[in-house]
Amino acid sequence: MEDSVAKCILMATCGQRLKTMPIHPFAPKFMKVGVLTAALQELTPRGVRDPDPDRAIDEWLDFARDLGATNIQLSAALHPTETDVPAEAMLDPVANTLDLRQPFDKDRARRVEAAVKTSGVGLSDVAYFDNMLHHDPALRQKKHDFMLRVFDAAALLGVDGVCGFVGRNQQHTMDENLLDFEAQFVPLLKAAKARGLTYRVEQCPMPGWTTGDNWHNNIAYTPGTWIALHRLCDKHGVGDQFRIHYDPSHAILMGQDTRSIFQYLKDTGYNFLIGGFHVKGQVIDPKGLAAWGYGGQTVERGDWVGGKPSREPADQVNAWKKQVAFCEHELPGTARHDPLAYLQNRTVDWLDHQLAARELLQLDVANTHLVIEHEYPKARIQDRGCLTPILQGSVAFVRRIDEAAACMYALHYEVLAAQGIPVQGVGRQPYRS
Image 1 (cartoon, rainbow, N blue to C red):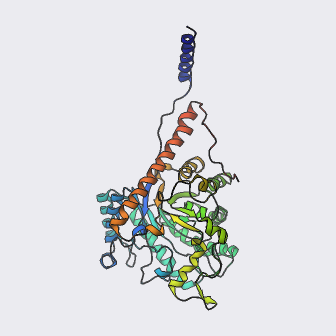
Image 2: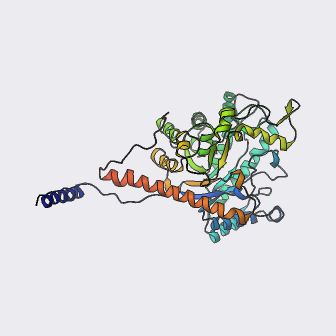
């Protein structure tokens, strides 16, 4: 009898609560999963795409559909016959999937639009990664001219952004580079604004870009400089054109963690700066870290010969030992789950990364792009058949991690919060040592 009364009282209490507490529907919002086309530079052989430059885009859209991707990030680069940095000197060779030796005009745009429609795969943005603050005026102008062609192509294709680097003048200090940015990069942002575009900066420090001792060779490598650069942009009326394409692998490379970075941006009022994501991890090698620390290998790398920088591109790639001596890129899903590594910021905690983005950043989640950037050395296979199942697995992993984070966020911050039900536990915390 007493149990029945208690049960009735409980039901009545719950019923009353249901009448008075608002009910929020469970409606998770998912991000758009894409792939940077540099993941397979030679999908279309050079002999085929050089005479028919947009064939590479057609075939990459079809390939992305097979991978299960929603979009591609279209990689642009100076043609191998025009670049000042040989492929042999690059840790991760770039891809000129978007070939701009000839102007990208309306006819070419229509062809790409037709391929987008046929494949069902969209374009997230266009990417061109180069040093926009190069100390050599002629080389810098060449890179700027190419970037303007990229802007023109992006505008014709109807995407809203271009992704790239800022770079660094190797002959100047970091403070002097702020002046270089104002004089040389801000005009690019004004050109982007005139075309209705946003420039999203990937924050890789690019330590191996030079055989010298500089480690931070892309000055937009960390929130402190993002904010300093954005102030300069605001001063010239292009603050809305400067955004960050955040890549957590670079945070791991510098001993940072995503949640603390996002919290710092929120604390300083700049959590609007991140406008997209590269989904690429970094796995720290404890032995390499013990040998060299987070500065990487500083001597006897092999990029200097006879007391001066080697002229051989194959030797120059050894400058990247500043990075690879203690870490290796991760293709999402290919590294084992390691809770201790997460806590030490030695690999990316993908679930918390996606959860923290929703909790701390100002995002239009449903229109935010997650772009898989494949740079895991052991799986950089230039063969479609071999690479397809690898990228399919990574795309599936990223999509489901994002879906899990979206469900957690909706449940915690919308459904439970509306009914006044507390969330269990503590979770990862920023700034915690």
